[in-house]
Image 1 (tube, rainbow, N blue to C red):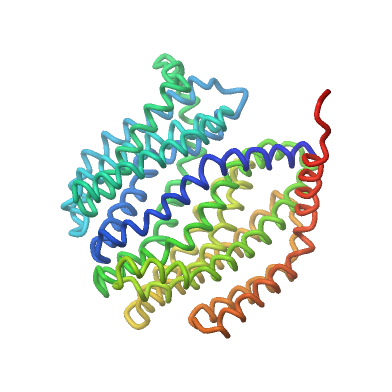
Image 2 (image 1 turned 45 degrees about the vertical axis):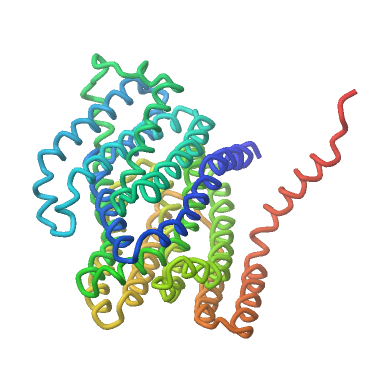
Amino acid sequence: MDKYKKLAGNTLIFAIGSFSSKLLVFFLTFLYTWLLPPGDYGEADLITQAANLISPIAMLAVNEAVIRFVMDKTVSRKAVFTAGLATTLGGAAILMACLPLVGLMPILSPHLPLIFAFVLSNNLRSLCAAFCRGSGYVRLYAVDGVIATITTVFFNILFLAVFKMGFTGLVAGTVAANMLSVAFYFVTARLHRFMAPRMLRRDVFRSMYRYCVPLIPTTLFWWITNVSDRYLIELYLGRELTGLYALASKIPALLTLASAIFYQAWLLSAVSEYDQPEEHGRFYSRVTQTYFSLIFLAGAGLMLITRPVMFLLSLTNAAYASAYTYVPFLILSEVFSTFVTFFGAFYAAAKKNLMVPVTIFIGAAVNIVLNIWLIPTHGPQGAAFATFVSYLLVFLVRLVDVRRFVQLKISYGAVAASLLLLGAQGYFVYRSDVVGYTAQLALVLLMLLANLRHLLPLIRSILSRARALLTRQPAD
């Protein structure tokens, strides 16, 4: 059971550092909707999403290689960190030279310095965080999550409420928090110890790039699936609806946040267990099925709170009142997005990343075609539906593909039933009367019953540990 305890322990540490802090950032949405009209909110979202696309391309996704190779006992940690830092700084220099190309997009051209600052600060923080996670400094990583959130909140309030900087202040606050986070990592983990130019080894670069370069097109395809719809909404329908769609994505983003916390711990366990093929099949299958059940239940919970949360957000600015209509399909999308990401740990553990961009490309191609077709006629709702179909398709492709090198046993009946129940609940989100909420509660209960068999081992484990803590005798 040590493997399960280790997974649970790491998940708890990452949750302490991320969930409560990121939840606080979610509540800042009330501040954003109060101080920014939908158009400005949409503008800030487009700038941030463009920078999020550029970031991994500029650093060649080397942070993914850093976290994997620093766990490899045969490779020097100094060589790994030095290669990662050289790649990150070199990518920043190339990006600066290429900024005029980014400026060809009219939406982004006025914000090039802001985009560059965001990309550089984000990449440096990603590098430091990846190195510390892979090196086993998980508690330090958790502490940084809390500190980064506090500084983000401080700078957002300062730039938005005090200096009245508008959407520029929203992005600048993240940049300032990122740079303080980098300083925190360098001081506490003494990362300067791992900066060794003499350790710039060609074989380490070659191995790391062979691992991470296939992930670069994956980043592009992820962006197409996740974000391109917002640019098309801007193109076809204008900034106002882009802002509403961006706000609607905030509730589903809570699901992504929770799954991302687990994924950080899951990646470490998946890698460490992969070299024991006679045992990992049962471990992988049990974790996968439990994860699926928890995500479906979390999705049902988010459906249940959608109307109340969106109502509260509309009190700060009535212009956001209709944003709830796009949430159900976005929650369905995020459910399968988390499943797709979960399978990514299997590719990382096996170092078989070549199929990763292929699977995402399929979803991205379908997504862009559906967006062009549906957004002009169905507006943001068409974009949300296109995203759902894309992620469902990628999930099915990866489910088949990973079984080539991982033994998985999944209850397909429970997955299908959960999808139908969640889809039915999404229908009742559009009803704010007693019938709508009663139906949603009934569907949540059915969701729990459909997945109870897979959750019982987890529930028993939690109850057992709670009982042990309550009955523990004090020392004499």
